[in-house]
Image 1 (tube, rainbow, N blue to C red):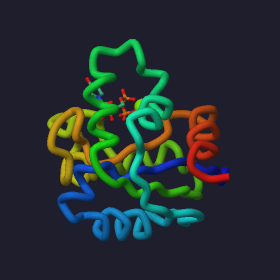
Image 2 (tube, helix red, strand yellow; image 1 turned 135 degrees about the vertical axis):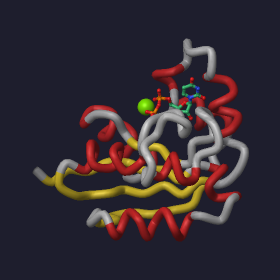
Image 3 (cartoon, rainbow, N blue to C red; image 1 turned 45 degrees about the vertical axis):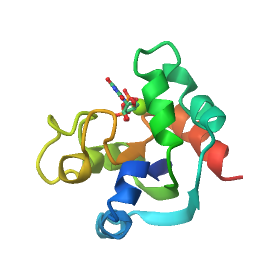
Image 4 (cartoon, helix red, strand yellow; image 1 turned 45 degrees about the horizontal axis):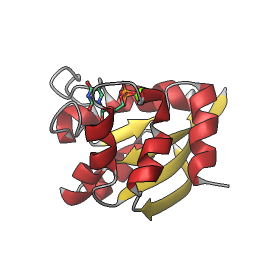
Length: 133
Ligand code: UDP
Ligand code: MG
């Protein structure tokens, strides 16, 4: 079943100049990129985007990090795109992510882990609306 998901290249990966390599991987994996833009989130926008995590101990660090520099936001489409993209990203902690995943290759820490992906069809819908109308 074809579905849509939201992908973000996080500020750490933009600073490392690996936008191109990540987008190449996305295309090699067969996703269609339906939308793409670079944006700089305000702290308030980052807090809104990650509001499901507002009670977590990592919320402040995460939202400061996500608003610390530009990010590249993409609307991806493909067969089982949500699960497929999360498999390509790898585990949240780059140290635990499988070799060949983007987080293993480009992530720096459990916080600065290079990429974001929606985790369900419900969050995909909400997250896509947040960035693309
Ligand atoms: N995060 C963090 N510390 C943690 C867990 C998560 O800083 O202990 C950050 C990390 O950038 C992660 C984001 O918060 O990507 C959202 O966490 P989630 O559990 O939703 O992981 P994801 O869905 O991104 O794999
Ligand atoms: Mg998540």
